[in-house]
Amino acid sequence: MKKSELFFNTLLLPVDFLMIVFAGIATYLLRTKIFSSFRPVLFEFNLPLEKYFLLVFLVSVLFIGIFAISGLYKLRTTTGRIEEFFRVAIASSAGVMVLIVYIFLRQELFNSRFLILGGWFLSVVFVSLGRFLVRYLQKRLVAMHDFGVHRVLVIGDDKISNKLTQEISQNRAIGYRIVKHLENPEVAEVKLAIGSPGIDEVILANPNYPGEKILEIVDFCNENHLTFKFVPNIYQTLTTNFSIDVLAGVPMIELRRTNLDGWGRVIKRFIDIVFSSLALLVFSPLFLIATLAIKWETEGSVFVRLRRVSQNKEFNLLKFRSMIKNAEDLKPFLADLNERKDGPLFKIKNDPRVTKVGRFIRHYRLDELPQFLNIIRGDISLVGPRPHQPDEISKYQKHQKKVLSIKAGATGLAQVSGSSDLPFEEEVTLDSFYIENWSLFQDLKIILKTIGKMFTDRSAV
Image 1 (cartoon, rainbow, N blue to C red):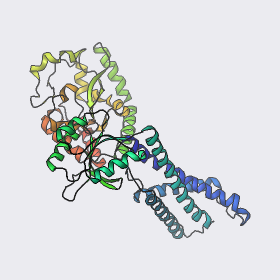
Image 2 (image 1 turned 90 degrees about the horizontal axis):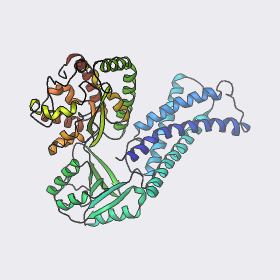
Image 3 (image 1 turned 180 degrees about the vertical axis):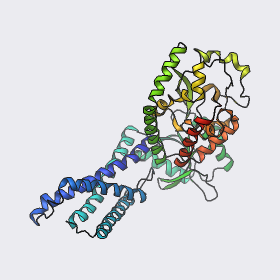
Image 4 (image 1 turned 60 degrees about the horizontal axis):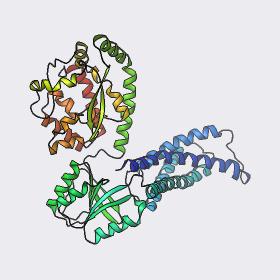
């Protein structure tokens, strides 16, 4: 899913909340200002606007919860407007029923039936209107400015392929742009075409394309971090991570490299920011002590900026400097001492470049505290595969590149399963398992294990 699609789908939640609040306030004003002349208001003293606004806020939270249960926040790129309207109406009706049952059980006499019925009606209208405006804005940005469009390579020469390409070409608002259309290509032609600038997605529209070629193309797309979608036939099997959607009336299946998508990504990013901000606040005294100790012992910057790769993008990983100045320049001269002979990684148990202060802060993992800044900036996540150096990644074998599918992490399943002593191939296996089976519960377990290892594991020394 594109970031733009994720943004607009996520935007629906606060928009829904505001629309429910507005509906509640509008209902109150209608009853007290407009319809009061037909029938006097009897609750102006025991239900003033301030108290009513608090009730509306709580009811809005209830409605949002029911909306979520009803599937209104499932992250799909295409949803029928009529289907969405009825979902809103049904969910709002369920919310009103919960309120009525609550009032009945409390054995209270509510002051106005109009507030409940009017609030229900206006909630359906306002929420539907808010969602229509969000979708309209999204379509306008897509159609007029190519905001977040899918730039695709379409493969196929049958009726389905032609229907698909025709619909994409005629309807710019659906968010797809055809960069190339290959009718019945060989795999080599597909690989060459994928190299064209701007292609970020491959759609196999021909359901009868040879299976062995499909597997090779899927493998190539995974290696190059491209989305792969296909029109299924009844003989094709599905992978663990997939999503089903409809484009131009044609069912599409998207093979995902990981199930970390949609609201999972939103919640994971939220947790990253909140947890890292709190950690920086709590560990600020340690930041000051480490800074003074490093400056006192050796010359050079307090921080070291290490070139690392996350999701195939290079960034500067921040750490407290634990080595002498220009330690990276000495790395080629220490190649014979490298203890990691099983892969592209570089590791020396008693590295002569490490300072006394550096050995201490490594012992207690204090050198990694600045990585919370990387997490807040979005370079890495709290939990994910280990970020490696560009020169190490250039030596990866094809299957090892799967660890680049998601954002790297300050800690991860591989780190808590064996730290730096783990064989590289086993590290890749563990990270691949994490990518395929991601869950928030698993992230929580890894974070708790990491905290435990900070006090018990000393393999980083």
